[in-house]
Image (cartoon, rainbow, N blue to C red):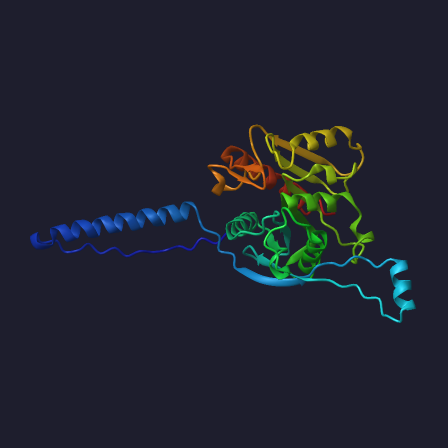
Length: 311
């Protein structure tokens, strides 16, 4: 990350008895300014530009029956897709970079979560595309309502990133939280090229799922997957993940399940320090679990998105 070097010319003020108090305040101002600059140097802010982009959600492949019925009615079979929005952020440099597609939970995409994910990923050297599955659909939340076709959103984001000259299309991972994590598990469970209209060689390299519903996962996953969940999660029970890990096939891609003791759903959201009951479930921030999960994710992505792993 580029850290700009700032040079400050400090000129000592002329101090007279009449201006002694003013001089003291000015000295204090300089001290505060220098302190702030020191903090900024130790903790540089993210300088990546965030750009709102749009792309097509991948459509389902039309089956032979659908095509035949359309032709019998004199219609031209079409594969429709929706336009989805997302926030693209890039690290400094020329690339090609590995990239991350992020999927939010059922409550929608908050600005805080969006910027936090983008900041993390670009600091780690990845292009970040934070998908907003609800805005263009006019949806406020999908916690107690049917979920839209978000698998197509993730694959559409993958296709969009793969078209960018500064992205390595063979090093793109999917990260999701809650409902987004569940979608990530669904995509890791199946050969999506058979279901969605995407090129055969286009797929995610790895997946990270924060507190997903593990009961949607197949016995065998197709890509390396990291699952992180709280022991006391009463929305997406950790016991379902434990049970799935015990019964799943030993074949397929490697999977790592991390269960954080005493942690609840949304344990990585700082705004939930005091806890919140939503749709009958308890959400609460856990600083220790959150920090450990970030380190776990960083190590996992570093391994799975390395150039050696992509070949």
